[in-house]
Length: 103
Image (cartoon, rainbow, N blue to C red; front, side):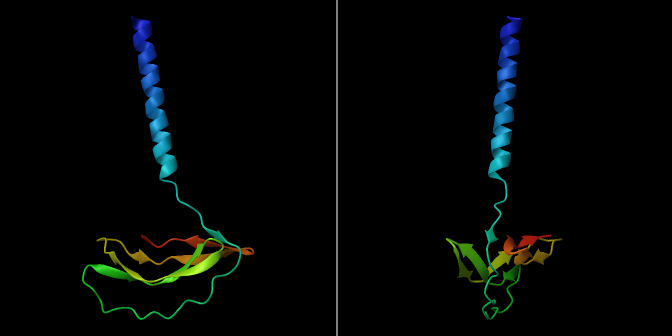
């Protein structure tokens, strides 16, 4: 009986460890790398201030081998945090997208 209980506990531990690994892998950040610099940002007039929100300005996305403009949008404020806009950062001949986030 003890051997069966030990086997059951070991199998349960393996299943739980596997579930944690799958959850961690699915939460991983995707890294977007482009082979060339993005075009100059488009002018986009920011709308009037909106209480409880910050404006995330538009930016270029890398999609299917080309840059595509993504218009700005509102992000709900997070008390005690500051908004850091996304940006393209050069890495040699390539560019990596650093997503906007709260810091």
